[in-house]
Image (cartoon, rainbow, N blue to C red; front, side):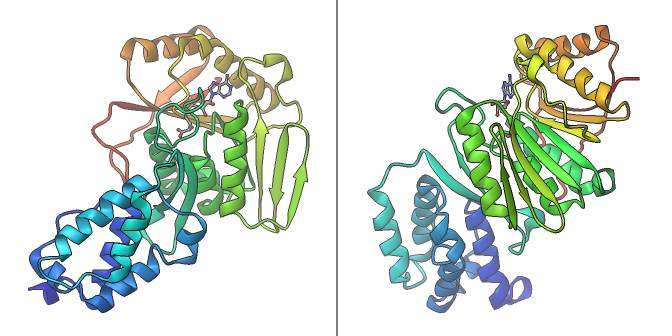
Amino acid sequence: MIEDNYTDDTIVETLVKSFFKGSLPGFPEDFIKAMSWDKQERFLKQTIHSPLFKKYPGSLKLSRLFFKKLIEFLEPYQEVHDDIYKYLCSIMENDADKFSYRHYLIDNSLNSILTIKETKNMVLNGTTGLRTWEAAFMLSDWALSNKEVFANKSILELGAGVGFTGLTIAKHCNVKSVVMTDFHEEVLETLNSNVKINFLSSEVEQNIDSTFYKNDEKCIGVMKLDWNDTKNLPQNLSPDIIIGADIVYDPSIFQPLTTVFQHFHKKNKDVEIYIASVIRNAATFDGFLRNLEISNINHIELPLKQSEHIQWDENLVRCFLKINKD
Ligand SMILES: C[S@@+](CC[C@H](N)C(=O)[O-])C[C@H]1O[C@@H](n2cnc3c(N)ncnc32)[C@H](O)[C@@H]1O
């Protein structure tokens, strides 16, 4: 019986969560029978009619798939809410969907949403940096399970992309500061947009190659840092922790990346470096490890067994490294 598993509130909440996750699982018949007009209206109010979604609309493609499936589920048992049909018609016409907003539920909670402007394309405008990759979910998940590592620390992120990891850590770990870096102009622009969406700052400091957003509690920075431009690495930064998600894939940058590690190790000999990777090619990844070894940089692999706070694909071959100089 539906009453055994769901209350009126949890029916709506379950559907809202599956909307934000971008999937509509097969629900039992009883669940659909309980999705009355009134509950459909509450669902719409918390999703497409919410101020968040109106301001930052999600992917039209995902919304189309979701609402088509929802109508398919509901029609045999329910009068489908007019606004569901209206919304579907309105988005059927528009295909300009290169960028959209994704609303990630941290800890599966509707009170803890991270909104990220990104694309679903693997490569857009010549960069892989305009979407969130699985390694970013893995690293963020690990951080949320190990918050003490980040407490009162200054964090520097390399190859931050659209900022999922840096922003999750900035919002949920009690850090002093997080500086997210990348080198691609459009990636940096998107990163700045995502900081503005998710972080309420009272002061913004704009420099040539960086922007700092500050409030009473912490500081978030967005900065241009190119691993290949080793002569211009920032001299005024000495992070306690360096993080990077999915930055180990191109053999030509292994040496520059190693040089970046060495640069920051000179600034702070205790700097800790955490790198999360999805291993697409074992030989390439071994090349990175060999590069560390010949540069006398130690590394250990930390266990990354299963998703806890943020969902990631546990079937992927992966490696989570802690790197330190001595
Ligand atoms: C696969 S994406 C990963 C993005 C993000 N960390 C994530 O996991 O979602 C790789 C990132 O590394 C950045 N990158 C590549 N080469 C770089 C370089 N030479 N200097 C700085 N960033 C670089 C790209 O711009 C891109 O944002």
